[in-house]
Length: 154
Image 1: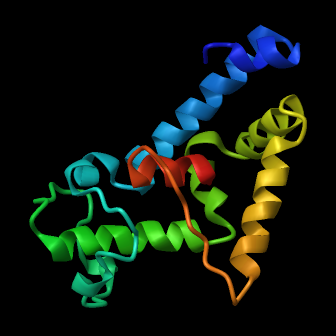
Image 2: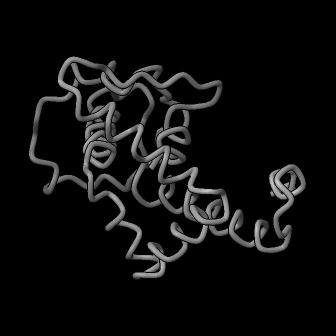
């Protein structure tokens, strides 16, 4: 949102700012409504699978996942990370965006992809390739919390 991309690549600053704000809104929407960010902020994990050992596999449809989470309640934390992992692994994850954006999410994604010279589709292909290999592991290295990193990748 600082317009540095537009300056560096000589593209329309205003259009870049508007698209950047839409992307920022989308990231916050994912974090707030599908990744339990405010509930898990104090329970950040270095690896999404670290907490799996505390997940008893209970059917989550009978549990209210929107309530407060004690960071020391490893089972409650594990349940939420299971939902996040499923979202991250779902090739149709973007359907959750229709709740807020309708079909315009695909149009917004394509506008950002075009504006950035196909960076998003290139990144998506790279992630799909990494994910499709049975002999490979998808490793994320980040200097920020895990959940915002996931939201940015989706």
